[in-house]
Image (cartoon, rainbow, N blue to C red; front, side, top):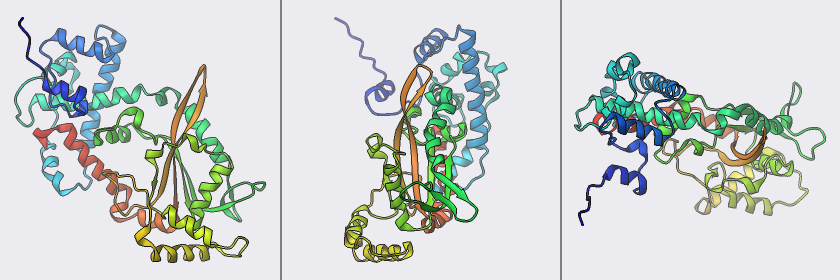
Length: 372
């Protein structure tokens, strides 16, 4: 019996080797028929005018993203990415970026399958466009796209209802009838990520998928005191604003103050003892200095965050009911004290530096080895 011993190593690496499809160096499409069948298996029919309209829309958005975010961005980048950035100043070929010249999206897949590793080749540029199109397609077919208004309303309103802004007392978490009210420096509602921000995040992280973006919706508390960070956590549970069984445990992060030292300190304090928040903060800091070798932080590795970035973060889920559907949807809660927040706003911990590191990584993945 004659067997076929020709296996596509690139495809098998994606299927069972743990490599993301975005990191696949090239496709294996030889003709228009194979291209159309490939797209059909992906979920779109190139014989359908509606599907063609959607795909050309992704193509247009991908070209715009590449030009504005990866080719034309002027932010600071890491030293190892300088060479890659210089290479990517080259312009996208009109053959691929102009629909009037490309004519048929099938050709994009065929170009992406050609051999040869020349930088700035049509093969490299085709793969770059397809990588971004892939991310856009997954983002557009997420539940959030259709039900963003309902999801945000059902998640955010309970938090917003518990935050009171008073000209005399400032911002407080808690209403007059609540057992505990906590002064806040700031309360933010996290608006859902812009398209470019979400695309950049998915392109930068090899293990990220559209349905694994867990922070499209969220709230952020900036407390006036360190002690109040933990008071906010207790408040959210006591007032049933979150249900801790729904927390995604492997996404939790605490770099503000170690949980074990905090609990030990609380046990050492006499119930009913009169202390100001400032005095409690001083006790907490002293205890940490004396037991720093036992401090148990919970730091989740993020390739783009500075090691000096301090915050508490966790992801929970809310059962959303809309139309005839019900589904759990994730949201993020961030809590940080005022002093830590000030440090987070500058230097390596700043958001601008975070985005620069993220963009640098996305460039390398999108343009592949030929442009990196």
